[in-house]
Length: 64
Image 1: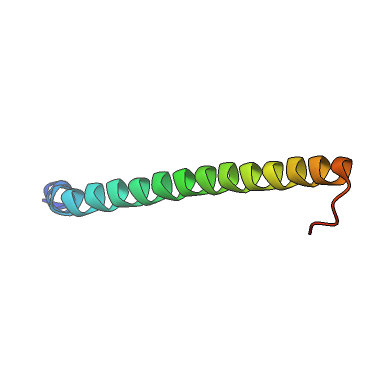
Image 2: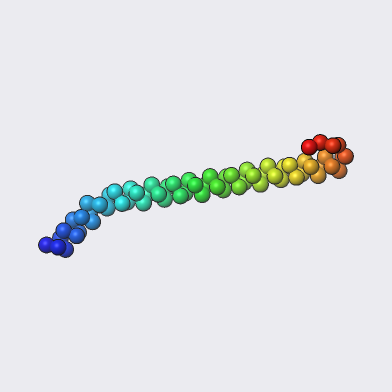
């Protein structure tokens, strides 16, 4: 009886748990994707600004 109750409660809770795990996995994946894109964007922006500063300073314009 106790074992049957355990199995029943587990099967009853499993759809909710699987949905929760799937949602948390999706959220983690989206967060990781957003962090990667943000890092790439920041690297591109800083790289462009550094390149721009180098070219501008090598030319000699007082450009911020």
